[in-house]
Amino acid sequence: MTSVAAAAVLAGVLTPPVAWAAVPSRHAAAGAACTTTYTVTGRTVAVRRPAWNDGSVARPDSPVDHYVHRGDILSSCTAAIARTPSGPAYRKCGHTGSTWRVVQGGQIPATCLRRN
Image (tube, rainbow, N blue to C red):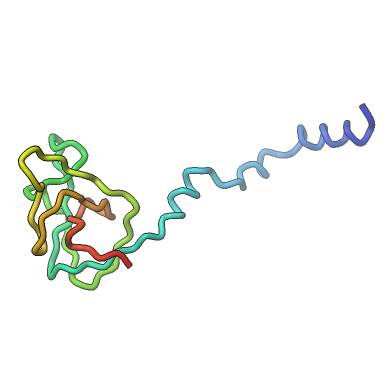
């Protein structure tokens, strides 16, 4: 091993842990990469949280967390699909659907949103 190679190995071994802490994690970068925004098209739309026994998808009778209004801009990168054997899961904002967009505070029917 040459002295240059040995110095490179020692430099890598002796790098202080503070330098490693400056490297962002994959999870933090993945959360920041979400830039999909939606505009609310309904007049007043409830953002619902699934009840503890509803699973991970909200229902039209799930508890309301808060309301959003027409023109509000929301960010969402995740969709929750409500599968029902009898047909659409909900009728909101003049349309039937089964897709809920996951937003801050809960879930909102995708039929009440327009992608920007």
